[in-house]
Length: 214
Image (cartoon, rainbow, N blue to C red):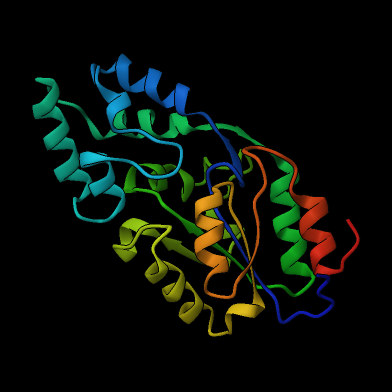
């Protein structure tokens, strides 16, 4: 399906799409600060236990810090937890930042829909994010963040909330996510989806779908 109009809203996942994910790197960082059983909680797409509660907005950043500190038997700082969570961000690609800006210049509304948490966003929304003094808000018209919405992909509710936020119909949305489960959930609501591999170059497929030259 080729779309040749600017009605399409383009909605991106963060980890695995905007930047390449490395769960192994995040695990290593958590172990560095003494969270030895971290593999029980961390996943590529949806976290478990208190890690999941953090991303679902059931725990604040401070409540998570206190709980995890109790679990490991020593006080953990906010800075340590930003360091550990941002271990997921394995590699950032300038090509992706350029593509996001290009889509907006071409008139496409561009949004982010991410299962994420306050520690990741403290970095990602800061001017340290892209290496050029810009955070996520510079590249996206709207951010739909699981912990703020208290909803998680792949629940239908988070996609319905995103559709309402975009003020358009599902068929006018292209959703790009490296999780097949998330894409299936979006597609079930009538959203067009692309499911690139973690860290792959999604530009040819996205631009072709939207009917613009790369």
